[in-house]
Length: 153
Length: 139
Image 1 (cartoon, rainbow over the protein chains, first blue to last red):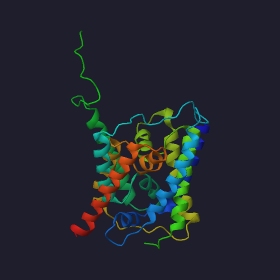
Image 2 (image 1 turned 120 degrees about the horizontal axis):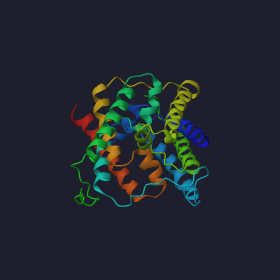
Image 3 (image 1 turned 60 degrees about the vertical axis):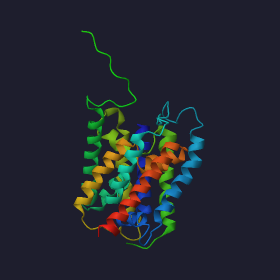
Image 4 (image 1 turned 30 degrees about the vertical axis):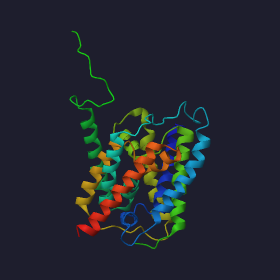
């Protein structure tokens, strides 16, 4: 129960932050990405402010053996820079540059009562499920898993 | 678009940073929205916290837009093709790349992750190139 309340409260702060940062205004985001046009540096302050907090606070938080309400930290385990990371990030960037939304602002912008974020989120989910299907289909052998041995009946 | 206000932008970023810190400190979870969405749509009853976080994001948006904001957020023109193509690529790419601006950018950089630095530099680069092409080359 407490875990859910914390998630709700953290989400609230996140949504407030996205509002104040105006990342829910896709034209402003595109203005930041449009470095050869009339450049809008707003996002620099948003990412800067956020990372300034996490770089300091995460150091303290991760010193603990476990979180306050659960028994372990759920952190990414991959350490190497692999093809999916780079290609996936590249594709994400193209989508972000086209839509002007990334996942967080796309969700929070739903409260604005316009259709853009609705279409964006629906398409996002479609894209995510498409990759999930693509990466787990039986004929697909990811390089990190060994070939399967034949099963004896 | 409303005037550039570095102060409110900074406040926004700090709130996001605090949010990520709380989620990590209490729940041990990374506040990466693409990951939260991907997990939420599996409808796993043991991970209701993801839906609570999303609900919080919507409530926070409502609180900001309808109670706190000094002026309304500008509403962009309806761009269905851009939303569908862009949204699909964002969903596909963030799943493949294991994160987005909050996951890799806010949290990953906060953890001093090299993987996340590479991810951030990559998606910023392609996003900037994309906007350049869309705004200055194609039209």
